[in-house]
Image 1: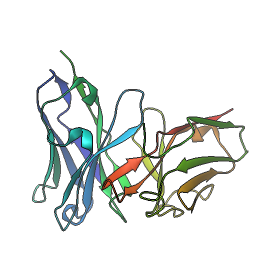
Image 2: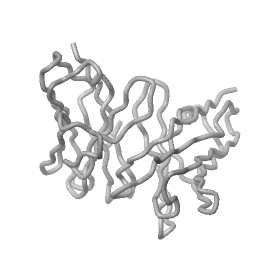
Image 3: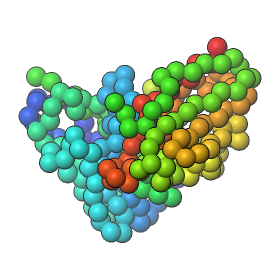
Length: 119
Length: 110
């Protein structure tokens, strides 16, 4: 059974940094592209970043380019999101999700971790 | 402002049918497959439809998807109170090179 567990969220001041982790199990992690998606309180889904499987390519939403970095450690079956220069508008639940048939097919999701950016 | 456009809300009575539209452009829906996600209150999203009209294992055939040109549609028949949720469409945008979602549609089963 596929299981994704996010961690690392919390309260951080504007301008600060956080690193989110997503521990994966139940599938061959290295074979799959992985996404980060966020959801601000009371708002819709917002795609953040993608790390492809075999090619190792990375993609980012414009609003996080230059501030967030996605990475993965296949030996630890873990996906990361390093978030720097955080802003109040980055406050959201951050989900990791596997990419199935295509990079845009998010077939399994974790339960999310809440990031709050506030002074 | 989402790249894909969905109605903010739809409603129908139990047992009835409802459709949710998702409108995009030639660079996203026009070129790529569409997925649909269901988010029940307080839970993570779940994949409902992928590749326009395919259902993952365990998704009942009350849920269906279709695509025509730069628009896609999610259909739900035999509505149940348990279907009350937010529904999102999503796809790849070949020009922006990002995953894009619709703004979400809240389904109310009256």
